[in-house]
Image 1 (cartoon, helix red, strand yellow):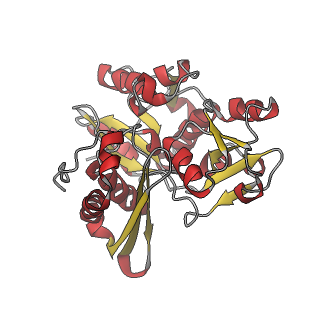
Image 2: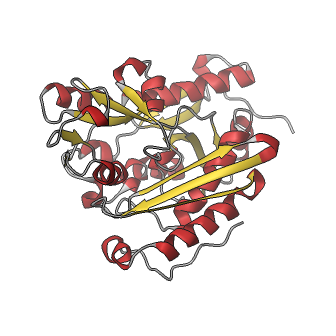
Length: 327
């Protein structure tokens, strides 16, 4: 069946947040669709949707509702038919999508590493005791407290430009950003250095862009299928199965990374931490990439079995939760 292509009079509407990074990701999606289907720019329209997470930047995410605050209004617009597809940073996405929506297209993944950003220091190791490092990420905060308990960790939210301004104002001596975001913004030089996954395991699906659509929209499905990257899908599926098995939320410091090897193999690493960084439980699985979801669920079970009682008390996760079915 021939794909129905968008036109200037009936453009494909691409929903996105309004930050510079979100717009860069939406433009990359549009440009890939243009190239894949030999279409002009006016066959697409980028629709900016302001989310609750963008409007409220003076409080930690866990106090105002978690990751869904960056996606709820966009998904409502998708369900209402105001947009045709939505572009998301997958590390911001809850494990479950609303009924009627699916994510089955991923763009090629960017650099997964965290970026250390400072006007004064070249690395975490160079920071003196008592120096302040800013982050709103529970994962990053816990990891910093684990490796440098002598540093002061302060709340630090906002887009890239806001965080850089806060550094200049002395709110903190250093912060973290994602290398992927800096690369997509054409600002890799902002990083004083990239932090290797062996030193700080990144967030689940960091560096991956996902395209969400209505499950019954066969036109959008055919259009985005042409730009979907299988390697990224295999990695993200394994990582998000780990997240689902851990019942991950913004109240839980969780890290994870899947990497493809030779012969269709996959290595999956995972880590859970107490929010104060006093305990870290880590593990890994190796197997075939096609079994990535099962590996993620199995690794989640292991981490929960090994977690201390206080982990469940502080995060609210049930120690007897068990993993969700793997499809």
